[in-house]
Structures are given as C-alpha cells and as structure tokens.
Length: 70
Image 1 (tube, rainbow, N blue to C red):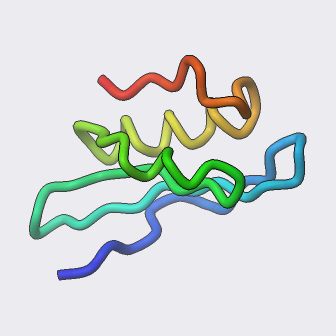
Image 2 (cartoon, rainbow, N blue to C red):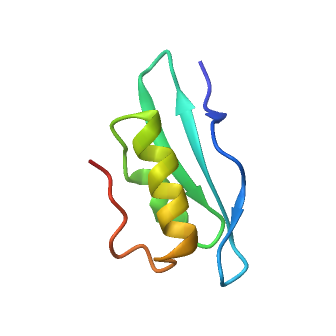
C-alpha cells in the first residue's frame, strides 16, 4: 500500500510544513518536513508517535535534534 497523511499539516517557525504519514498495511509510520528531507528516514513505532513527533518538530525543534521516535 502507500503512505497516507494522518495528521494536519503544521507550519514550523521557519516556514516549512510538517505532517505525519502512515502505511497501515506495512505498519510503518514517519514524519515529513519540507525543510528536513532526512527526517522521513527516521521511523516511528506508532501513528501516535508519528503525530506527536510531527507536532513537536513543528513547534519546538525545527532543527530535528530531539524528535522523539520511540
């Protein structure tokens, strides 16, 4: 199957857009940020984790230094 967006699209202070995606059939979750292409390679363990990481990244940590993934 394909990834689908599972969170609202958030705007970070630097103007980039952040959201969470899930592939439920493959049980894979990730965060997408238009300003941080490497962030999508960091897996999350659940849909809740991906949504929380997207929110945290957009509001508190645009440099992705402390994004919780577990």
